[in-house]
Length: 426
Image (cartoon, rainbow, N blue to C red; front, side, top):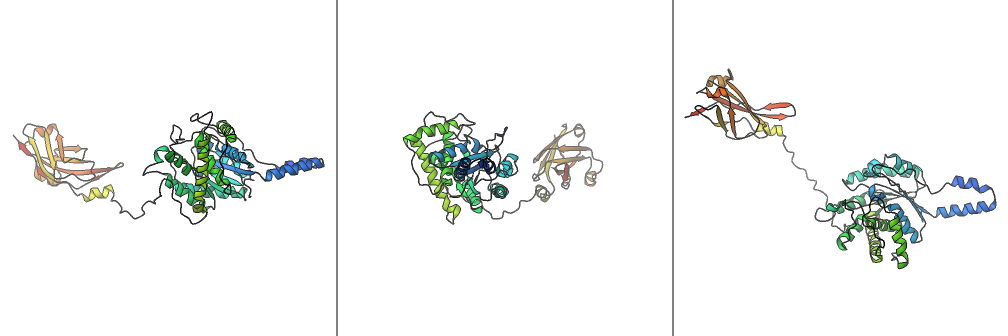
C-alpha cells in the first residue's frame, strides 16, 4: 500500500500550536547505526516499521481541531490494527485560500515526507469557487515537498439552520467537494453526508450549542468517515464489547474546545451505527469522485443556479431623467394663511425632493426673475406644503416646481414645471 501522511496542528483564533512533530529522521538514525552490528539491526528494523506507517496531515480550521479529530482518526485505525501517525495544522475560522499562505501551514508542508494530506474548507460562508481556488493554491505546494502525497478532502456539514429543508446547503457542499476532489484526482471523506443521515434518519443531534461545531460523537462521525476513506479496501466490521472501553477513552481523552455531549460511556450500538454509516458514505461517493458516476446527496439533488441573462436594470439617474418634469395640478392657500398647498399630477420617480419658487407675476415666473419666495421640500410626495411669512401678505402668487435627485454629493435637477397661479380661498 502506498505511503500516506497526516498532519494536525490545532490552532484557535487566538493561539497556534507550535511545531509539528515529524515521523522520522533517517539521517540521525543512520548516524547512530555505525557503532556495532546490533545497533545496525535495530535501526534497520525501526526504519522498516516506520516505512509501513501511514502518515497523514490534516489542514483545516475549527472543524478539524475540535475534539482533536486527527487523534481520533489515528486511534480508530490503530484499534483496527493499522500503523498510522496523524498530525494537524489549523487556523480557526479560515478557508483554504488563507491556509495556502499561513506560515504554520507552510511550515508543516515543508517538513516533507507526508503521504496523505487531508484538506478541509470553511463552513460559514462556504463558497465552491473559493474551495477550488484554495485547493489550487495548496496542492502544488504540498506536492512540491511531498511528491508522493495523495490528497483527501474532508467535507464537514453546514450550520444547523442550513442543514435540512428545501434550502439545505448540504447538496451544495457535497457537489462542490466532489467536483474539486475529482479535479485533483483526490479522494473525498463526506462526513457531512454521514452527519446528515444521523441527524435526520436517527434523530442524533451532534451539534454543539453554537449550531456549528461537533460534540464528541460528531467528531467520531467525521473520524469514522475519514477512516474508511483512508482505507477503502477495508471491509466493514463492528466494534465489539472489548473495544468499547478503548473507544470511550479515545473519545474523552481528545475532547477540546467544548464540554458538551460528554458521556462516561458511549453506547456501543451508537458507535457502530456511526461507524457503519461512515463506511457507507465513504464508499457511496467514491464512484462519482473517481469515475463518471453521479452521486445525489442524502439531502437531495443539487441544482445549479439559473444562468440565463437578466435584463439590466436602468440606473436610478436614468429613471429620474426619464420621468420628465413635474406638473402642478393645483396650488391653493387661504386668504390670510402663510401656507400654500401644492398638488402634483404625479410624483417624479427616484426624486429626493423638490425646489419651489413663488413669484408676484406670471411673467416673472416664466422668465424666472424677481423670485418672491424660495422653498425646498425634502421628500418625494404628490402633495407639497410650503410655509413662509411673506406668503401671507400676497394675494397674487405664481408658483413653479422642479424635482432634484442626490447622488453622493452631486445634485441633479429636472426641468421646471409650467407656471401655476395659486388660488386664494376665502
